[in-house]
Each structure stands twice: as structure tokens, then as C-alpha cells.
Length: 198
Length: 260
Image 1 (cartoon, each protein chain N blue to C red):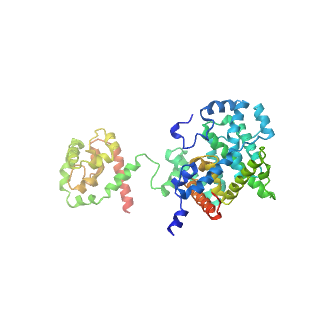
Image 2: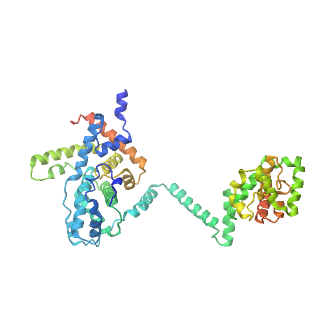
Image 3: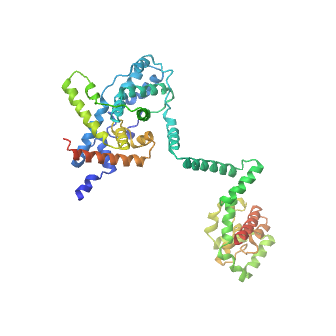
């Protein structure tokens, strides 16, 4: 589906559906549950991670909400896997904006990071380490400005190109590049200043 | 100090390398490692909500508002940008769109008669061109030529033109003139107005001097049809082109207006 020349370095692991994307999206349009499941399995973790690092209160619910909208509008979608990915994150971004607006109208007091303790995969030590790692990532990401965080997360977690990020956020390519430069510079500075062990 | 400065700067290429997870210089390794940790945040499997799970199983998404497909995303972005604008900016953008559309319709002559005249007169006052005829731009170009300093020179010494002008009048047409002007004015005019030469039928540069008297005069060669008094009208007396006649008349009146 996608010519190798257009692929970026490290793209193979992110476009997991690959050449099967065409048949899968066709089947998903017809409502085939296996195809819908495949699309969800492929992108839901990334959408959830993006929502969580963006400070969503309920990242899992947000991801489910995103996929409800995506699957409902699948009949009108035309494009390749990369465009599909871009579309999904456009919706995720909008849902996040909606959530922030709702939160601004009805502020919720959060006393503790419940999500750090809420993950249970069977191995307590592994879960604790993973939670600590996530906590550090969350903390550093939260210190970035909203624009810088948005751009960096869409580039890193969602693995979108600069052009796609610009489209999702409604910004110019130059602005996105500037934000990612500033974001990385700020991250580096914070990592060095806080003496985070490397 | 220099070290501090280099620590603060990160260029696009380095940023891309860090984001891709490529090998980077030790200076940027902490950021690159952190980026990989961030990337890992998108690998945790999540279960769908109950509603989504049910709908995925059945393939039925009726009753859910579908999200606009990617094609209309750009339109929505524009709409969002407009929504973010202030009242003045929105008004200015709207006016620009309306004026551009009106100008386009006027240029196409698509208004009803009365409206066309009215709008055209408005546009004439605002823009440096009109919607009357397609050849207007050529006329303006001719007009510029008539105003060149070369126009005034022959008045002091009209002799060289008189005989040649007579030859033109006598029906020898611009061809003889073209020979002269072609030799003497090789490059400039024909390439400037290739369409004009073709529409003359003869396609000879002989028309050129009659249409662009100023140029011939500026050369001081006295080629036929370059005589200011003849102007395009005399060139046309040889029956080569009627459009050139109109052009000449308009350019004369225009140059008169400009002089005023």
C-alpha cells in the first residue's frame, strides 16, 4: 500500500498493519468484527498513551470514544494506513480539547494519581517499575508547555510526520518544527537540571 | 559560555534524529532515551469500553455520530481558524472574498447589463485595468510606447518619415516598412507582442512601426509608419488591420488623458 520510498526510518514497527491495511479497512467498513478488532488493537494503545500523557482523566474511555467515532465514520474514509492514523489522532485531539473544556466548566479535584496503582498485570514488581517509569514520563511531559507537549506526543507516541501534526493541530509546518525544537530543548534542560538518572 | 549556548540549541536535523530514535551525539542522548520512554507509553494494551466491545462484535455503529473523514478535515481546520479570528479579521476576510468574487464576475462580464456597467465603473476607479476588452493590456502597453521620449524627436525633423509614409499610403503596405523595421529593429517588438503580429494576417513586423511609433522614433531610423502623425491610423490605411486602428485611437485618447 505504501511505497517504501515514502516510509520514514523506524516506520515498520509503527505501521503494524502494513500491506494488509486495504483489505482490513474494506472489511471493517462492512462491519467485520475481526477487522474492527485488528484496527482497535493496533491503535488503541497509542491513542490511550497519548491521551494519558496529555493529562486525560479517563484515557481508556477517551480512546473507546475515539474509536466509536472512527468506526461510525469509516464508510466515508478513504486513504492509506498513515492517513488513517492521522485521522484517528485528529479525532483524539478533538476529544481531548472537548474534555479540557468540560473540565474547565466542572473542575475535578484529584487527590492522588490512582492510575499509578491501578495497573495490574500479575507481577507486582514489574507493575511498580512500570508505574514509576510512567510517573517520570508523565511528570516531565507535564512540565512542557501545552503546545510543545502536543507536538512532541504526536510526533513520538502517535508517530505522525511534521506535516500530519501540522494538519491535526491546525498549525503551520514551521510552527510545528519550532515547537518540537523548543520542546526537546526544554526537555533536555529539565532532565539535566533535575538530575534524572540516565 | 559557548558550552551553555550549544546546550540550549537543537536544530531540526538533530530533533528529527532524536524523535526517530537514531543514534545521536552524547550531548543529546538523555533526551533520546527519554523519547524512547515516552514512545513506550503507547504500548500498553487497553480493553475497549463495554459499548465499543459490543458494537465491534456486531459491527453495528448506528446511532453514533460519525466523525468527518480526512478530506473535510482541512475545511474544518479553516472553519476553526475563522472561529478563532476576531470580528474585524472575520469581516476583512469576508470582504476580501466578496470583492474578489465580484471582480471575477465583472471581468467575466457575467453581470446583467446595468449592473455590469456600474460594477465595472467602480472597479475602474479602484483597479488599474478594466473589464471592457481583453486587448486592454495591449493597449496599455502601446500607450506606454507612445509616451516614450522618442515620440517627440521626429517633430523637429519630420522629413525622413514623410516619404515612407507616402509609400505606405500608396498601398505598398507595411511589408516594405517591415523590411526596414525588421532589419533595424530585430528583437524587441515582435517578441513582445507575438499575438498581435499573427492577428494582423500578414504577420510581418511592418505593422509594428505603425502600432508603436514611439519605438521607431527612439531609434531615429525613420522607418515607415513610425511617423508620429501617422500613428497607427496611417498604418491601417493600408488595410492591414482594423483592430490596430481602434487600438491606436484608444491609446491616443489615453495618452491624452494621462498627459492631462
